[in-house]
Length: 168
Figure 1 (tube, rainbow, N blue to C red):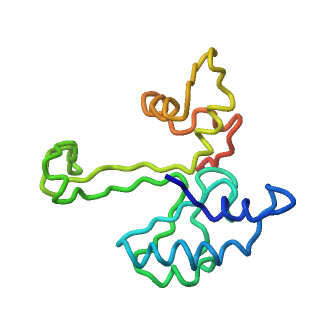
Figure 2: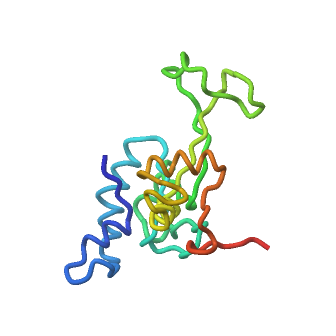
């Protein structure tokens, strides 16, 4: 599986320096990636990443809709923050799975799954500051995900080494 973000495509478009951002990549994302997705599926969430045109610190605000003039015309297109949590209703295909719950925590016909998404800055920071035999003993990114869930903390290295906005 390959994940594309506007920033990752723009980074790859650079011929001289991989850190230079190229706004010419945004029409490619809008025309060739987002538009076909929005036409084919009922809900498309676009989350900013590390190199995308959004604020640097977490949580990142959604990218401006003006960057995606074609995709924003679809009702299925939704710009979201980073990180982002969404309740996804279970489908009829999921009816035999009893891991979905309503908002009261009870089994229900209107059950959902809660998804929490992040573009990865928090994962990268934990990996960067963890020694394989150190305090955290992080083995890989899946291990990081499991540990973040068990710790109940999405960004344990913030604000020391990961930029965050602190609400007052």
